[in-house]
Image (tube, rainbow, N blue to C red; front, side, top):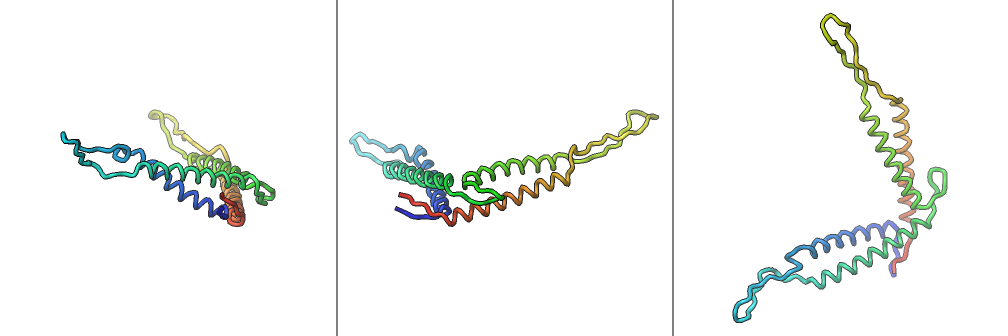
Length: 176
């Protein structure tokens, strides 16, 4: 049994997933999943590629998979149990992660709206001896108000992230 903070478990999980992905890559390479050799008439074999310990890597792959599953399960369990006080309310770590995800989507949308809605004024003349007019494009919203929304979202995200990090560094999970 191993006792880790949630943050330490996340770091361990990241390392395991890195190793897991490397093994996936190794196992799927044709050079590693096959053996090439020259077979002479007298049944002598001459290997054409380097020997690869397929069985060992294959078994390691599934062991890592089991460890990843255990750690993710424990992290998920604690994320759904541990409550934190943030943004004037109590919520689980998972609730805070969900709120953070939604705020990031909202932030991106507001930022895109602000970026795309540029004001412009183009002078136009259709033909000689006709009146000059302007083709005007203005945002359909108050940019200062939208920037205020963006600033509030940034503050909320920071509060959420600090609370999540604090909880992840203080709560210990047991990995069997």
